[in-house]
Image 1 (cartoon, rainbow, N blue to C red):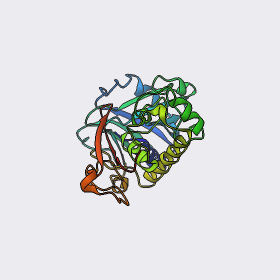
Image 2 (spheres, rainbow, N blue to C red; image 1 turned 45 degrees about the vertical axis):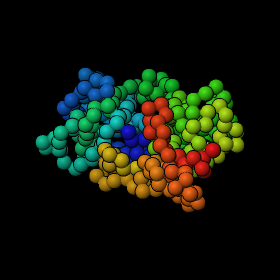
Image 3 (cartoon, rainbow, N blue to C red; image 1 turned 90 degrees about the vertical axis):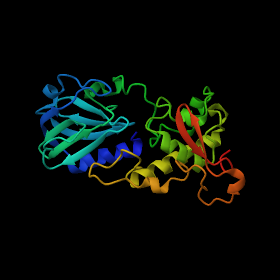
Length: 279
């Protein structure tokens, strides 16, 4: 699933390539995604002008000049394609095509776990998809005091807590593993046992990892690619993710004794860590 860096990359590509423009048409080839696309979406947005692009957690928000905002989620396998001409014929899994005055935006989603809907811009933060989200990890509200206090009642492993979008929004499986490695914290540690200084170190690591990943265009794993068709390359910088049995960076361990990077499953998600360097 595209995580914060991948969604940020998509949002930036839309803003730079399509930008402020009028929506001339919406072609819905398949409205049965994770949630059904509203029947009146075309009626609501055709003729409106896109005035701004935002990212909230893993959602792309497109603000319109008619007081509405589109809410777009990539799901597990969704991707955005930006083209100068209309895809003719549409490719398999091209579920939605937005025709704008600056080109075509196509949403392709083989597994159909994505989502496209709209709401009033003034009530965006009240929408059921967004109203319970925690602070963004790159914002000041995600502070040491905040994280330490939120974790006091969390008995789950810290890796699981970081995936809780009500605690912090936008962090997914890849970047939780990478940030915990950089902070030297075991993903197995009970969240409520982290000390305040460890929360501070973890926040710094989360931000460092996310900013590096955004600069690299995200991680290309399985389905993800950037809207221009190119691949993100942060996967080449992963320290532990999907590296079971390998040495971690600057490893001084006896890999024959330690077994290298280990993989466990927490809350149904694969988790990678160094049992020597992460405590």
